[in-house]
Length: 152
Image (cartoon, rainbow, N blue to C red):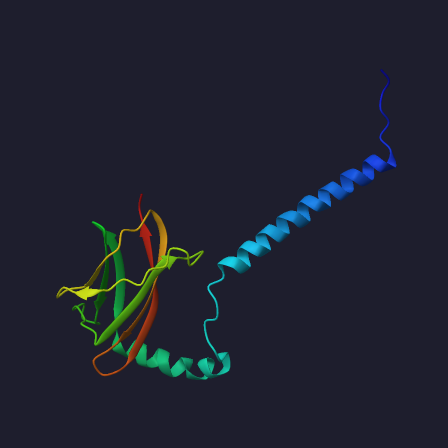
């Protein structure tokens, strides 16, 4: 049996095959990115940008600090004022989910226990985001993304 010769047809096949793999991977990644995109964040970004400084200043004037913990099948949101005392808000809503997709998003009902807000949510190990929105007793809106790392 003789040696096979590497011809132009072989080179073309290798070239086309390599680009087919590259294009195929790009299509899969683009499809995955579009499929997991959570959607529109603001209906009118110009209006949102004009109000941003006012909302930020009002929120910072509250002096609140938010901490999230997960233990015993519950998520605990601790909101404290500038003196470190617990804060009870007029209204609280939150979405707990992964940073990379919305498939695991849940909107638990947080209950104030006198020190913090607690909701029964059993989270798997990894990095989670809590996108919370609260309203202070004086009507000031407060929103924050709190990162929560759950150990496995």
